[in-house]
Amino acid sequence: MSRVRLSPLLLSALMLSLAACGAPDPAPAAGDAPAVEAAYPVAAPPAMMPDDAPPQEEAPAEVDDPVMADAATCRSTIGETASALLVQRCIAVSPATRPPCHDQNPCALIQDEIDRACGQYGDDRPAECAA
Image (tube, rainbow, N blue to C red; front, top):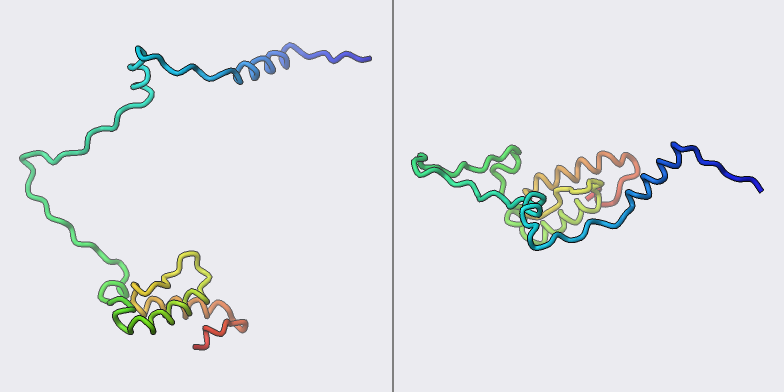
């Protein structure tokens, strides 16, 4: 039978790795509160406006998309039934993970998504692209 001989370096590495797998530190005692606070600091209080600060106004919400800026919802524009059909077409053809196929968006945005998606299919278009 042959004996396996471990080199001192390999033996040291094995012992260190086993020592690292030891039991976790016990829960801190009641008298160890400062150590716990250092490990888990308390959240800072919310920022407060100084008393001598000038009056602040709410900034208007900026809309980057010109289609969304002045457009009403598709549901309010063409009605619930027609907008539901447009949304169903959009969902059926769009390969996007989060398409804008929702009746709270403008109809033009939903139709643009349908046109964009149908343009990607080529000759193998779904039936919803023909509508």
